[in-house]
Length: 370
Ligand SMILES: CNc1nc2cc3c(=O)[nH]c(N)nc3c(CCc3ccccc3)c2[nH]1
Ligand SMILES: [Zn+2]
Image (cartoon, rainbow, N blue to C red):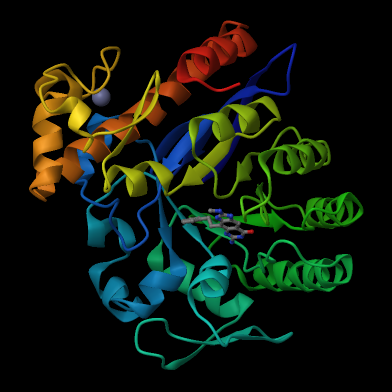
């Protein structure tokens, strides 16, 4: 089953409070979704993810199709069982990953021919194939197969790409049968061109998906351009359906997206930067390997009550990174994910209490944003 309840909309911005209900549990929105590309949120166990408050995780059709392959996951009884995660899972359709990971790919009306970035073997994914793979994975929310166009490209390129993505979306909708257990989101494209964004949004809304992603952003464009396109696009999206902005995740991007009416967001940033020792704190990011912290026995962030901050010091975590101990990456990941999940919880509270913009300003001042 799938249900979205819009609980409240802010008076002084487009920020909204909502709740999604799926077969595997509820998701309070606005929500930040940790990315678990190869059936694991790197370095984290499912119990640790639950303990820090993760309500849903993301995984990837492209990566899992290549390794371990859909046959093994099918035999395991689907992705939830395979990775022992019993809460909601959202999978991407593979389009973005094909374009960002494999080269010498060929896009045709039928689908995308490409070479595996693992062993170079010839592969092909179509809208129907993407739906079939996501069906085997058994994720609760699945994405339509789309092309995330590069940036910058011509208006003509985006026009052709966006219209093909609309035809692919129709094929996904026709092909998607398992509608009780899996919910298909349409993905709005259109690059940085408002006329094309409007066409894509209106046509996708007419296809009546249960939720919509805003794709084609966070592809290297300046944040002001992304915010402008995002602000324009959400106005064409139905209030009663969830809006998922793909590929954001640093604190400012999340605040800006929520302010413009986004309910869901993902990003690999917090887990990726944690593994090289970059830690999010309320006073901005810190590089824990810095000699500055050699004898600093305080927590990573004095305001944080995550497992890492309750039990370990900067000096100890710096030591772990300096001697390449895996525990360092784990502790930094636990903290970065908790930091963003806790920030989203505070954002939800601020919408509930009608002080979202004030919370955003306070956060920005302390974090060191404009
Ligand atoms: C980092 N920036 C970024 N921009 C994106 C645009 C698109 C887009 O236009 N279409 C699709 N299908 N995906 C996109 C993604 C991947 C998001 C994701 C990653 C991991 C797991 C699940 C989902 C993007 N990521
Ligand atoms: Zn912490």
